Length: 306
Image: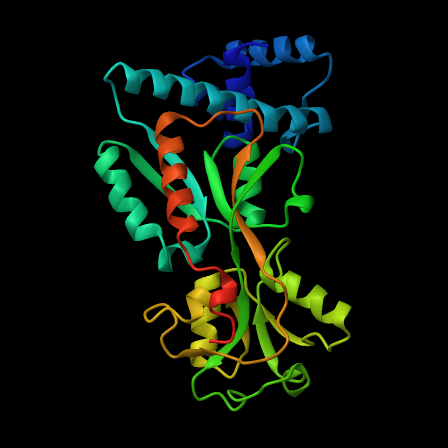
């Protein structure tokens, strides 16, 4: 299994055809086809399905594609690390982060990182698990910082807890239910929730059902935390999200938490990395800065009921 064979497989997936993949790799179609055939012989399975509709992947091909992307990304990280050590081009760190970091530690982390790694290139992505996990497994991300239930993560992912985050229901400041204090009084309201796997809203729904409360029935589904905040700010919707975002003077302007009791347990915020794949020096530096800054945040118990 060789480097150029894996590149050929990935390029076919990304370009959608043998011809386009060969053009992207500056190869003839026959050379690229040969590389793919040799790869199939090496693994002992057919990887591609060719039909009048174009190129598709067999189950074996799809499984290998995920690993091929990871292998190529890992090799590129190693090359970048060596170039940096030898005074070449700077590192490129790709990270997925949860939006609550923007209202807490991100400004200080960026300042400290730029001081330590002024030439490094940074790419930030939104840290929803449904997006971050594939990015980590395929090597497209160095690490992620996200809310997660460790027991629900795939084996390939390592989770290092950093702090605990509490979430609260929220409304605009002049919402008709702004003074509600129990779950029954908001049972018939319309909510806007992110019900993607592993989200705090999914945690809320499961907790309400377990406690015998009526879970929200009328739900506007939304996967963007900042869009949820804006929808709540401008409509008679009830949202749910990290207290630290809702009480932030800028991010949470025009919003207020509902003082409903009791509240669900906190969720761990942690560092997610690919098991067995070490971080490069620049990525490790950035992760350490996030870790130190998050350790200094007040624990949820100190603000509960504020």
